[in-house]
Amino acid sequence: MPVGIFIALFGYLLGSIPTGLLLARLFSRADPRKTGSKNIGATNVFRTAGKTLGILTLLGDMMKGFIPVWAALRWGIADQWGVTADQWIALAGLSPLLGHIFPIFLGFKGGKGVATAVGVYLPISPIAVLLELFLFTGIVWKWRYVSLGSIACATTIPILIAFFRSDSQAYFVLSVIIAALILYRHQSNISRLLQGTENKWKG
Image (cartoon, rainbow, N blue to C red):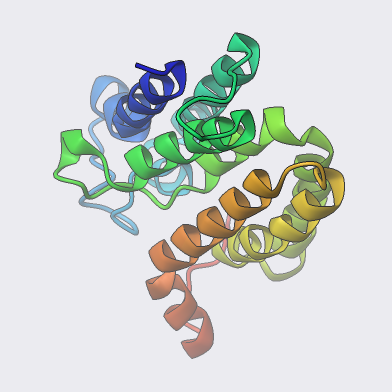
């Protein structure tokens, strides 16, 4: 079996681990699925279980995306089964995001994938991630909407990936798929933003 398939399966299972839910259950009485936005991601854990657990959830979810891609790059995956090395690496990046959004351990009902996507992009193009961090920070500072910052970054990072990683079409396709998944998971946020009822960041 190609190493790429093994890493993709590992990535999906790793992505399926509900970092925020586990931390909240272990160290607080809050259940992020029942309070706030009812999401298991870092923002809701921050709001419902405290700043420390929110930050730890953010880091944990990022690592879920980072580890499979880092492993695929470190392993030096070669072309196999008519699939190029970059395509295997892109699959390694997509797998934890799918695990986080559709986790097998939670009945395929998971988070929104933003932090995990950041982890995926870090080993692929750290410069793109840094630029998106400035964009995200600026939007949240100006308008106080985490969801707006997340949506803006998800939809603009394919442009940066196309520029900084013009050597790989697979990475660009990956970024477009990730953007589509994140927009899909933010449908309710988009609706609330349009209606002016979205919760503002108070951290």
